[in-house]
Image 1 (tube, rainbow over the protein chains, first blue to last red):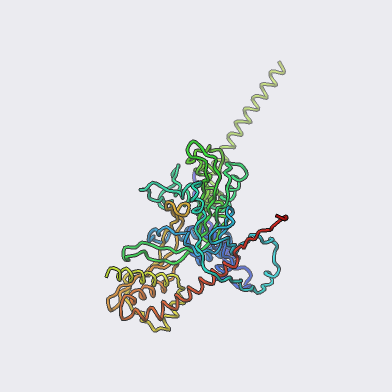
Image 2: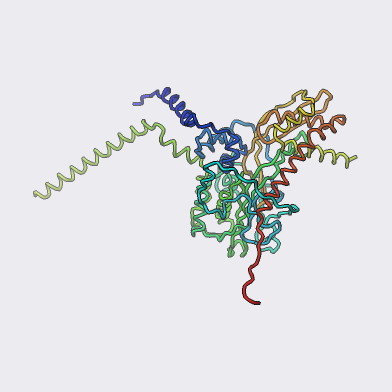
Length: 370
Length: 153
């Protein structure tokens, strides 16, 4: 028998107004403005843009407030919003070599054209909590250093001159870049599609997988050839203009991971590469992405697939935190009928089990008596 | 003639790039200060949609899709006949409309100079200053390596 149950409308409405109240918190504390979040929680905004896969700072800030700072909920909100907008097209590929660089470091070359620019980094801080920040102390203007703007070629281009590193990843001439927002995932997948999935993938998941490769699960000897952060221009080809329409600038983080490779049946000894490119300032994510990209190229490079980070279907199927949270969190929604059925089943199995046990016991007693 | 046409296109694109990078508030402020006309027939939009941003594998290899960005666009026609377009990151409809009108006005030889001096030049100067400042701030974080000499030889 199946009995449909209705109810909970009032409870749901009241729960949502309670949520709104708790979200606002103590009314004597000023409400957050979106520009405060954009300016002062910028890396949180960047994470929501990167994993929400939508570059729009104000929307990401709104999502963070609406989600009470729950990043995955905020990412979910942004993903949902994306689906309401029409698509104007695909931009021309950005040129990270022409980036207005705000940070650029290489762990492989000390002296490289353009130099090592630390930029606004947490590196080399002592990770001591700052009581002055808590007291709202004024912050000094940063120092400036005059000088000519130097060209900053990508480090991969420098290594390429020696011929000891594989080139930037190419695809067959007639290959159209795949788009996971348009076509369902299919395995095995081309590297371009993998990169799209990784770029919006969960930072924590990719970080853990990248870490696992360093600890020996598919070790691939990585060096950070380069991490660079800065703004790049976007252009879109449109039929109404005789040139590509300039759209403005977006900030991205790029990581070129360089991996020592002793060679295989498919490729000679050389440096191979993993690539990371994400929205905003997010170098942990870009580095983790590059480690995963390299690990996932195992088959292409003739390596044995022995670890989770090399398993394309495992990594890509589980890297999306909106999908993951949807499936995990749905478990808390009412499953009354499913559970009732399971309960009946388990009761019946238990009764049968007990009946068998009793019968066996009787049998044993009988045998003992004889 | 062909050279002139190419130069015109490059200039028009540069104007569009400057407007796309400017904030809507700055455009409105300069627009009002200059007393530019904002009457135009809207042919399309302003409407907000998405573009998919593309990168290249390894930085210079085959293209792949990174993610989406919001873009607002508009197309207008002036009474004098010029049609102007705008595309700009974000969701600022007023900005998109004014940028499209600016593009149309710029194509009118009698208006071009006004658009250039009253609107584009100040925006361009501000953007250039901001860029120089950002570059100089980054340059101050450049590592100057020096070598420690040890021993006598």
